[in-house]
Length: 498
Image 1 (cartoon, rainbow, N blue to C red):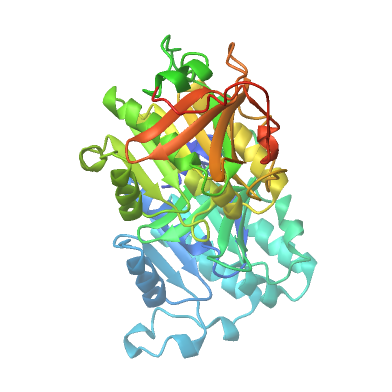
Image 2 (tube, rainbow, N blue to C red):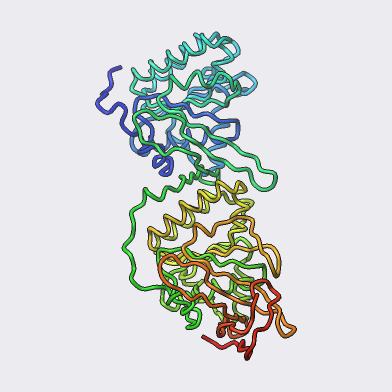
């Protein structure tokens, strides 16, 4: 059959926008691609998306199955809300999987065929249906029939040349039942995509894919998280900040609405920067971050608040007690609240959640807290790399990012599970200290890259009226140790509202 090969090698959409982004446009036309992964990793679902996209653009598709029946595949597709109506099937299945008498004339038993006969039947099915897209599932059966690596490789090579002559774009699925042999096919395939299922000690299994090879294409390397949900596969491309255009830089800073606090931070937090609020549990880090959220909403800005530790109900109840009423903003989607379970959400999914809201117009993003985010990605070195890309992206979009980080201990020396201070553009430090038989709070800005700031220690109180910042603690020494000593002169620690 003669095909117009003027477009050979051009991008063929996969049916998944995110995968096309990773592959720099999609699969290569009239080429063979290897999709490999353990059972349950989602290879078949990738094939469904690929064939359905072909139907959408007028390219007929053929699903060649050597391991499952058409009924099983259609049932699997329906479970994802996908309809395979219009997709042609070539079934080569064991007899115990096909007991329907009405299918006796269309089903051939692989257990009774030699390898050459199996390959011949596949070629006949392709010639008869003239598909532009083919999914071949799976190579494990061909490997078993071949019985030796040389014969196996020759048969796959023969199929590759045949599909190319027919002008077919092919996805060949391999479940890696013979781990030692899979590398042999990498040299034959135009592209190789590895899908992995990574079990965790607790929580949902993580899925990720990696493009091992794609000739003549500037694909995005590294691991990309994905999830299998109703509707099929959702892929979350790895965040690469340099690939995103920068937004126009805003002149005004983001103020908190508390005059004393704004003076401390140098007039307000700069847009396009990240601020880290550090301190022990219970000191008010979330409340301080919420003060900036309240001020942003009053300026009619949109805010995204992601929390790993609190439900929306508790959030609204807690802040109502402080005089913050967020009900109208939540109802109007001006405040987008996302309670994230780190045991169920992958870092890639979280990153996409943030980027989607930024594209919608969010100008302030709050992550409360990074301790919960760390649980979503236990490997510290990878967490810091991903946070670097995320913050670089948010800074480039001129978004104000506020993060909280819990430190262990109550008073005295503090330590955190991760050190992210070098990534933040500004750092606000909060501590408890003892004075006059009471536990009090102190706040200070220890870092601001974009300008001057106060170096004073100020007392902070949180009550029914919200957050109050007092005058400088001039008559104490060793406040940050938690057990200060009094200096000469009046104490001067009465809190005053900013």
